[in-house]
Image (cartoon, rainbow, N blue to C red; front, side):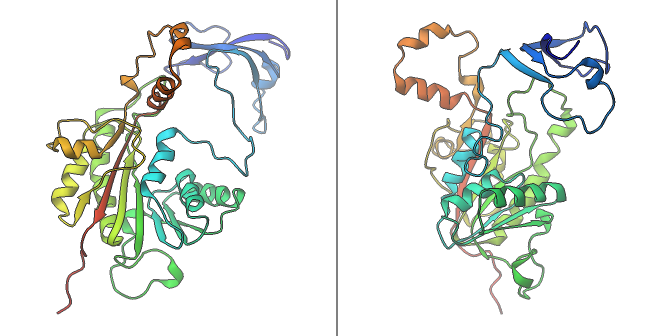
Length: 333
């Protein structure tokens, strides 16, 4: 293969293709055709600094355009539910907001933008490289209200009542107006995803961590404050079961209706009432009948139906909104 050759591109589903192999009969998915920008020899030269475009796609299977580095200081590309969740949080100018698991900063920067960059947005993540990414995105978008810290969210609650140093973590109880907990999860709603490598042990490992983070979030939230819990997964255990647990574990919390409400209602099976399920928001791409749909049939469809269909053809995602009705602080004796 030389630069300028027309080539076909496939995804190696199981990761079995050996580097430099000239033939491969394993499981693969066709992604499209393109023109090679570099030769085979250059690709496999072993030079670590080789970066950029290897194949310029001319006939991709997926026709969505690339928005990479398009108006980078003005636009931040997000999946629809990821943008919806910040509107559900509804941050207001002048408030103090906590994004408990913030990286890479898409929701953090969206929060600051909705607040017109007035107030304070604290962003936490325990991986330093991810925190750098949050800071880079805030700088790129010209947002000054964001303060990002490399800190474990499960330890964000201050043990004593001594005031935190210059607003750094850990924080005093009931010191935030609104909190977003976009929790670490099994990520089973992410798309496109051509292969599933999760084990049952991995999928079931997230619920205890999510509950630790949720407990911290409740204690950091002011009375009357809003807590939004979200995941990019579709399991009952990480979503509706967590809501049922939270309402039992924290009587101070009340489930709230969401605006905008674009996704479907919650899934049955966690003991929540029909009214409570209606207050949840679940994006489930499996309900969209696109796989066997005749594209030509869409040409006569109403624009409202097209938008509704497009809104549901998203990643799998879950959103729950709570308000804290009273203090969780022990009364002083």
